[in-house]
Length: 219
Figure 1 (cartoon, one colour):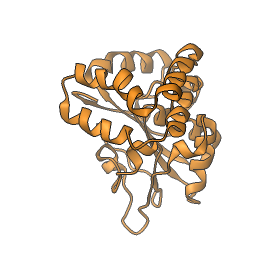
Figure 2 (cartoon, one colour):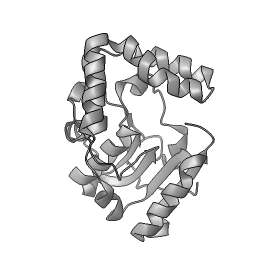
Figure 3 (cartoon, helix red, strand yellow):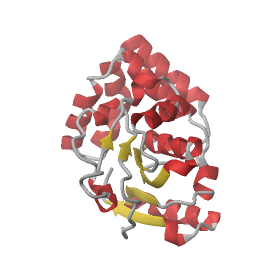
Figure 4 (tube, one colour):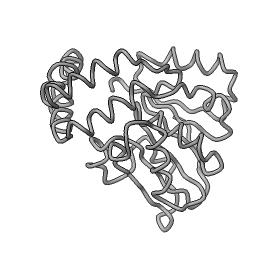
């Protein structure tokens, strides 16, 4: 990934779910090149699940975490959608976005939303983990990641888990925010998805100077 410096004094706001923010001590490695001088450096990692069941509420509350005029907003998966929503609500405060495995061109899926939420409500967090998410990590043959993800998942309450599920499946399409961005967007994703991302950038005819890419072997 090429480097791009944000304005001096811009803190990093990490908009992940509680499952990841509870263990964040430093900004993600992918954003290290965006860090500002130590005197002004600040990292906020709010617990999004506590803010409700939609990314509009998540973004609104995330923006209250700092009064800084400029922000570097980092989001992974649905957190990336939240980062885009932050940019939608306060475009003048965005110094840069870092989107990790984020699909901005998403359309709400009410059928999946209901299926996952009902299962979690009826069977609990552990059963939901075993049924839906554990097989995905086992398929990738990443035992270390699977164990860590399980530990994180089982810390969640059913309420917080269903908040996350609703926000994920019902999040709005935010591709227009990407297309109209006048700030740097740094994209981090797995190698297997990079062709889709490059195609999307070309299709939108975005200025290449605003886009930086980093590809990793696995999520």
